[in-house]
Image (tube, rainbow, N blue to C red; front, side):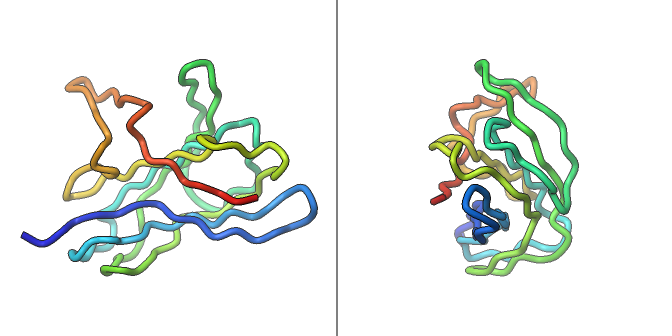
Length: 138
């Protein structure tokens, strides 16, 4: 059986001394291609980093363990071949407020949920501590 694996990665671009533009993409780290509209991505960003000006995705708010997150989500509109990226969206955040655990993700695909460590109950509720973390160097 061929390995199926994916994660969210980021590229950053400094806007000014206190903010950066963060570009999120789905990175296919496995051996199987994802077809167009086969990946539904979710990115949760702690509101304390002041996410602004997203260029794609739907947004709502989510409170988990007394933390407020902006929940960005959308369908990937193109294929993702092995060892390749496909952009999801980008936004601006305040660099002086970034800490570990402020950028989280999970992916829902035809091959299952990623990261593989993620746990979801039968009722569809996910264990917040099992979602993926995106590391950003500010």
